[in-house]
Length: 62
Image 1 (spheres, helix red, strand yellow):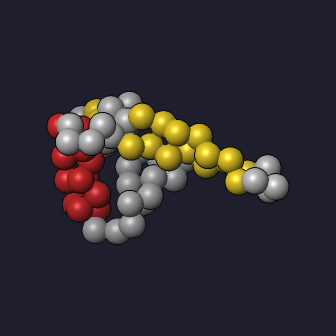
Image 2 (cartoon, rainbow, N blue to C red; image 1 turned 45 degrees about the vertical axis):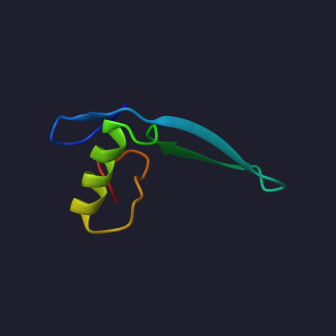
Image 3 (cartoon, rainbow, N blue to C red; image 1 turned 90 degrees about the vertical axis):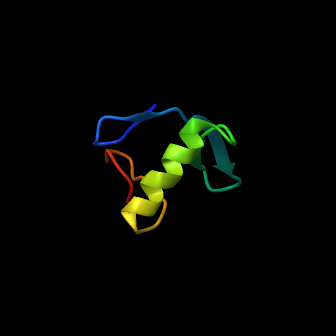
């Protein structure tokens, strides 16, 4: 669950991707296509007005 500072939660699925040869990994979080959570995430990203990136340890976009 991604919890936006406004208190609303958005259900996200996580996929772990490995960068071959570098020992690096990335987590990609996505909502179910066409779901209410996908619509809500779109609203949050548009309202942020910046890149659609959530940094570890932050509670909201960017």
